[in-house]
Amino acid sequence: GYSCPWGVQQTLEGSPGSTGGGSIGAVGKPTPRVVYVDDVVDGPDGPCLRRRAIPLPDDSPFTPGTDFGNETGPIGSNYPRCPSDPGGPGTPVIDARTVAMQGWEQVDLPKPQPYIAPGWAITGKPAYLETRGRLHQVFTRSTPIGPLEIDSGATYSVDWGDGETTGPYSVEGAPWPDGQITHTYINVGTYDVSVTETWGATWRLGPVSGQLGGQQTTGTLNDFRVEQIQAVVGAG
Image (cartoon, rainbow, N blue to C red; front, side, top):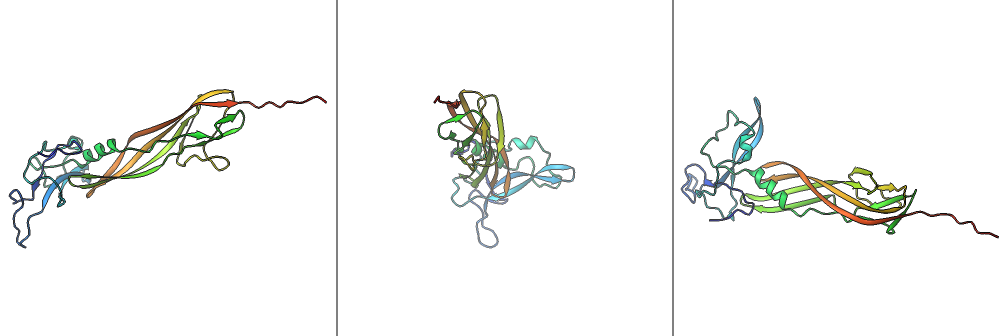
């Protein structure tokens, strides 16, 4: 059988009345191949699950009527089924949220490359951090039910290595004089500066969408040197 690239177990079928490859309808066209997804909607008593059918793309490798795994995904235990939902036990379903979450875990998110010019700082003077990363990235992945789009965004937080952490910042750090991510060191020494991006995203797969989070990327500026300038008064 075909192995789903997202590692998600799923069941596919033709629409009601189909026989494997799809039956011929009244208009002389094959019945669309479909996969079912559970969507969370607002019901009369709060959030509930409503099942909807999504036509499979023509190039999908799946064959209607072929069983590839479990009937329901993990969200089925979190919400009741809507009273008016025609779906129920025995209706094949794919959990689009599981596909999105597994795709989110596999994307290669941008990583900051921190730098502070000119490579060292002076006590009592602001140090301007350049994050050299990216705060927004859109990823598209192919899935059996069409393209998964993940629109991700991030904020920065900075551990300056001297016990102080600042952020979140929703801007890229830039050099003097326009940079908005700065820090003033008090003591001479060497410090490990760590910049962390915290990521969230909006995903869309066919008619279903949702939110994602929990991802971080980190870049480190090791052994950053902080010096002190002393005025020397000459004789004469």
